[in-house]
Image (cartoon, rainbow, N blue to C red; front, side):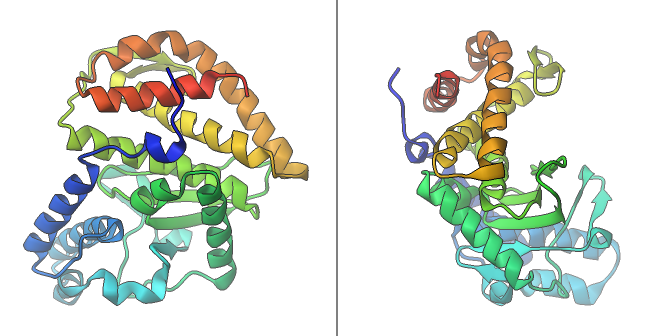
Length: 296
């Protein structure tokens, strides 16, 4: 099986149409004039969730804001095709949509600090240099940076199915590390969109052992891990070549860790993929993992 470039791996038909159709439906519900970009798609879900929260709280002013706001009203938060957020921990909340903390754009959202924008720009430049620019533009247009950590501390990152196109992540001072984590979470967003666009429904009662979690997971979770971690491997291999010092060591350690994880998961991949009827989608995941397990 010949290798595909990172750009080619994520160039899957149907996803852009799915995003545009979903955005159009949300715009119809809210009654506003959202556009058709990937950023509009991500922000549309913030507006929809925010409007629902405001309606439940009977907050008419906030509901009106969510119903009239568009991406054009949020340019003070933007960095090119991305919106960069840096909320305080107290601004995060949980609800019935997620046990994990999350954040919604709101009327009083403040722009991220200039140094945060600088870090994000450098991370996006690194990702783009190594072939992941399209992935981040289309599947991580809203970047929410949380806690600044040292390189030797645990970094937490996540994405939510109810907020596609948004990535939540801790970060360090190193753009290559942020790029890795943005790619990982954007990969989850990509796969969710791809499954929806191709009308794939995975069985919940079939499980495979996931070495990343150390437990058995349904097909959905197992494939998500295989796909997302394979892309971080492809990025880390390329970025490591130009990295120095502690970052080079960090990326090398990530590659060695993933080498052992994929060794434990690889034999189950073909069976897990057999539950994906969409040939093109199945092919992308298979190619990414096969490329990731090659010595490099």
